[in-house]
Amino acid sequence: MNGPTRSSTPSSAGLAGAGRPALGRPPRVFRGYAIDLDGTVYLSGKLLPGAADTIARIRREGSRVVFLTNNPLRSPASYAQHLTGLGIPAEPAEVVTPLALLTAYLADRHPGRAALTIAEPLVDATLAAAGIAVTTEPASAGVVVVSFDRTFSYAKLLSAFRAVRQFGAVIVATNPDPFCPTQDGGLPDCAAMLAALEACTGARAEAVLGKPGEHMAAELLRRLAVPASEAVIVGDRLSTDIAMSRSLGMTSVLVLSGATTGAELADSPHRPDYVIDGIAALLPAEPGEPASGPAARPRGSSR
Ligand SMILES: [Mg+2]
Image (cartoon, rainbow, N blue to C red; front, side, top):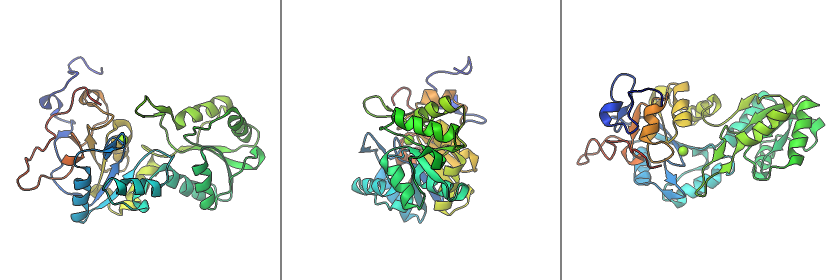
C-alpha cells in the first residue's frame, strides 16, 4: 500500500481527480492501435468478449492495428495464424514480437558479429534467416543472445559465460519478463536465464528488448506509421503496456480483463489515460450503446 487513505477496492470516485485516469471508454477514434495480446485480446487461448468486433471496427474506421507480445517462443506468422483462426484476420507484419526487434538491433548495433544463444531453436532460425551468424563457439561470439529458453542447461550457461568473460561478448536479452503466466502457475522466462548469466559474469545486458523498452515502442510507431499523438497502446499490464506508452507520448488504455486488478491500479505509480473493463469498450459508443459501456467500474479482485 502506498498511502493510508487509499481503499483497496477503489470506487469510481476514488480514482477520479488530478493525475488519475479517466474511467470509461476513450471519446475518440485514434489513427493507430497497438494492442497487447494475452489478457487483452485473449486469455488462456479464449477470445475475450468483443475483441473480434472491436478490431474489425477499428479497421472499418480506417485506423491501423498492430499486435504486440513479449513472448519470443512463437513467430509473427504463427501469431497471425492463431488470431485469424480466432476470427481476427491478421497479417504477420501486424504482429510485433521481441524477435523482430532482436534481428533489427543486432544488424544495426553489431553488424557482422556472430551470436551465441541461450534460446530455443526459433531464435537461432530467426537470426540465421536475417543473415546473422549463429555460433556455439565462445571465441567466435560477439554477442550473447539470451531468451526464454525451456531447454536451458549448464552447458549453454558455460558457453555464454566463456563468451562474455574470456572473449568480451556483449549480452542482449529478448524480453524482461521474470515468468510467463500459464494456467498451471507460469514458467521461468527470459529474466531468469539472464540473471544466471549476469550473476556468473558480473556483466549486465546492454539491451533488454520487448516491452516496456524503447525499442519496442519505436517499432510499434514505425509499424503504425502514425504520429505518437495519434497512437494508442492497449494492454493489461501497468508496468509494461502502460509504462511503454509514456516513453514516446502515446495514449494508454488499461484493460482490466487480464493481469491488473482495480486494487493494483489504485496502488500503482503508472497512470493510464483510460481504464476499461475490456477491449469491447475501446472505441466510442455507437448509436444505441450506453456511453459508459461495460467499463464503469474496475473489478476488485478477479484476475
Ligand atoms: Mg498482456
